[in-house]
Amino acid sequence: MVSLLRKQSAFTLIELLSVIAIVAILAAILIPVVGIVRQKAALAGCKSNIRQVSMALLTYAQDHKRAFPPVVSDFKGRGYAWSNLLQNQGYITDTGVYRCPGDSLNTTESSCRSYAYCVTAMTGGLQAPAEAVTRLSVVQNPSRQYMLTEWHDAGNQWQGPSWSGAAQDIISPASVSPSHTDGGRHFSFMDGHVEWRTMEQCSSQWSGWVLNDIRE
Image 1 (cartoon, helix red, strand yellow):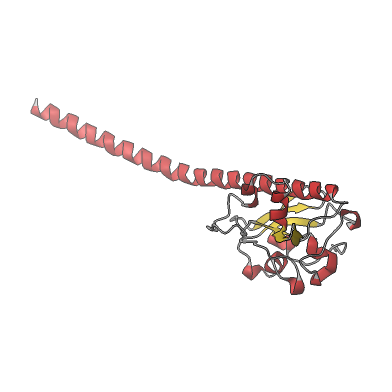
Image 2 (cartoon, rainbow, N blue to C red; image 1 turned 90 degrees about the vertical axis):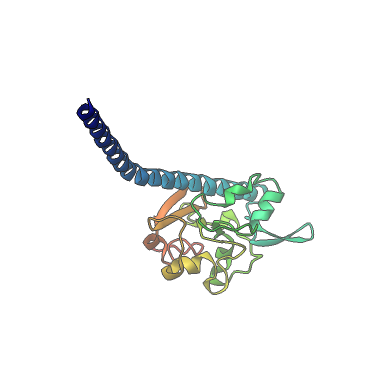
């Protein structure tokens, strides 16, 4: 009887070790899969957000004689960034759309956004002031002209004097800190569509940054 109990105990221990080994193998398989699923969900959420903001900008333009909002404007006697202007005039109701779900930057600053505004600075080429206005009617290639792009802590900077803001960071890859791990980011275009582009595709100043000066 004692010998039988020992054999049963030994069998139970082996069974337990086998279960532990199986669990470890499953965990090793599932953990990377969960990470991939989360990344894809963040990508989908980011694409949805940037599309919503783009649609708000296009709607604003249609309501304001086809003029996009300036980077910073005087609205009711106060200075407002373009994102605040969209919110205050009812074009954006959920400010969460200004942040990419994959953006690892942890901040409570209201001016920090995951998306940089590329429209206004195109009006004056490389030297556009913050209050410059771009009209949709002057855009010759809306399907190839950048409207918004992902950029950590976009804040209230813009593609302005001496290529400051997102354009400078993206054209100089050493200073880029993308939200996603696979070497690219989302861009929305002046016709409203959204594309995923690699850093190589957008690293030239002529790839869509400068108004009506797009080169192959």
